[in-house]
Length: 337
Image (cartoon, rainbow, N blue to C red; front, top):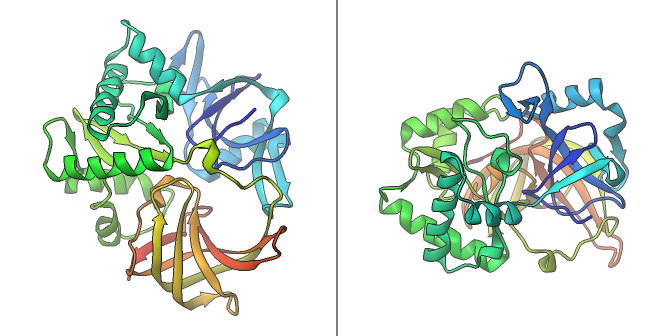
């Protein structure tokens, strides 16, 4: 089974996980629980009631109680992760296949109709093929509710860049249907994310107000994820050995933001100064597996960031460098300096 960011999987006991990243161990998928069978939930599919869990602490707490065998220390990533064995998976949800079904259906609910209409606009304006566009989130697994968001996914480097440029133009022109968040919308987004990422509102506003992959379509929130295609992913599990070196807060200059749009996102940095934490580690890049850190900074901007330092060692060419990882703790952040 090949699985990547934006896709979801369901285990035989009915837990639905969202897939994280693009590289996975043999016969396992790195994924975290997102929709869980629970009588406390407000979502129903057939006769099963589901609840949605979001922040990382809540997800790990659920796993400890219900599926502790999935919590694995991974020696390649040097991190404790949730790894789902392929033989425990009963269904693999593909965003591209789901969107195709919605486009062909005449029984879509209002949210599903919005998803199709929004992505039809983006497809036509950006001139990207349908087989590179999908819909993820609650729509993908049939668990959407009235106030659910739209979670599109665009695949392939060129398609992603085309789509983002078009989105920038549309949102700048204050389109009737597609709109950028106003201050109130950004405040609502801040209130939601502050449970899982600590940052003051002014710093949040500076970076989030210029992102074109989020906003509203016909008054429904959307967040678009951009993911590389399979033939653009060369790394395999074990090619690179990671080592946790501890926490740090740094200031740095962004020298390359060409990978900032994709999940996972990467920023090359120079002129790094360690403000607090582990020193004597020449940090070359900042990386995150969370979509919220995409387009967080631009080339030549000075930033302050806090997260985990990792040593990155390529087993093939023996090269070694250090990077800062964002998103594994609520205290992780990157702001403009």
